[in-house]
Structure formats: structure tokens, C-alpha cells
Length: 108
Image (cartoon, rainbow, N blue to C red; front, side):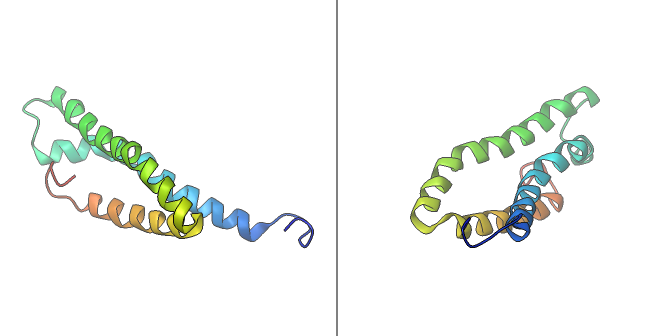
């Protein structure tokens, strides 16, 4: 590719930027709203306990990523990186939207 293309590969950089943005956005947007979401679920008996339950939701998000990263690596080795990145980015967008529409703690 280096021999046939000169200059900065803007198309490739833009697609990588979009994928990184879509994968980083859920964790960045999770924590500012999580306190209010848990508070509105009325699961915490006291105001001080909201952070405790918010920690469970944030931990579940990152634990899910950690437990499935090896699996997604094996799938990428078998089927290619591009289909896995597209599928992963699409599922991040879908499940982040569903998380925003969650109506109780266990659904979140």
C-alpha cells in the first residue's frame, strides 16, 4: 500500500477515528449520567449508597469488555479485523442506546 499511495491516508484515518470514537464514547458518557440514573431507579436506600450501585453498573460494563476481549480476538483472527470492528461498533451503538432506555437497575 505504501508503494501505490502517497501522502496521508485520510480515508483510513477517518474510518479508524470513527471506530475509536464509537468505542470510547460509551464509557465516557456512562459515568456522568450514571449517578442520576441509579438515583432515579430508587434502588439505593440512602443518597450515599447511589455511588455503590453506580460502581456495580460501571464494573459490569468493563468486566463484560474484559471477559469477551479474548473471544473477539479469536473471531478477528478467523474472520478478519474489519468485519469484527464493524460488528463490534454496531453492537456498541445498539447496546449503549438500549442502556439509555433501561428502566430498572438490572436492565441497566
